[in-house]
Image (tube, rainbow, N blue to C red):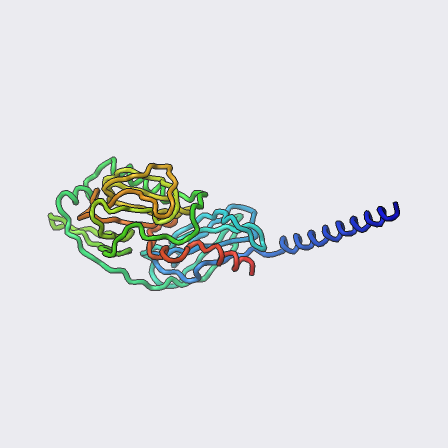
Length: 318
């Protein structure tokens, strides 16, 4: 009996010590200040970046980028699905507009109606090419003729790419969606459209164009959900995939579509075939990546992950 009593006292002592250590550890974790980090720490027009926050649970967070007092964009945070020394990690994926002028900028992270963190940044300079495109009569109608259907399609597209959902279908790098080595128009190209009647208009090319004969397979650049798969007046047969909260890839002018809205696809899954439907001068793929509705250089997503979990965890645990 004495032996049992002695063992019981030892057990109670161990429980007490374990509880004290646990409480001390928890208390230390709770006392840590929230941490905010930016990946990468420099911004270039038309390129994405990630804002990460850990150790702040009071209210929904938001991030806003300013240049000369003008808001250039904003982002909503989502759970990364990982925890660091301060607790859950939240991220917002954003992009510097391709039209942003070089110079000083501020990035504000706000929560509970107060500024949680502020970054003083510099938007680097970036030169974009320009091109002039001669427009035929039929193409001019597609661009300029008022059409309620075209308006509805534009509103639907902006509603999709402006939405920050919760689906995190990939955190890896993207691949090329088409087997082509000929790029006929680069991202961010400043375009001048010349019409038959002598008038002209301008636009900025929101993606990249790859020459591809009609029937060339078009593949998903990364795992995602098909959120749009239908014919549109301007972009022809179109597919849009959601990859991460606020991150979408768009595929225009396809000859045919072989996926359905609501489908989940993997990297390399066939979406359809290249073509020349909609506003197109020849068979090709227009490939676009949108981040928080901003047109973003697809090349930045190739080769390395934009949402680098390993780097985020390492920084948040410092």
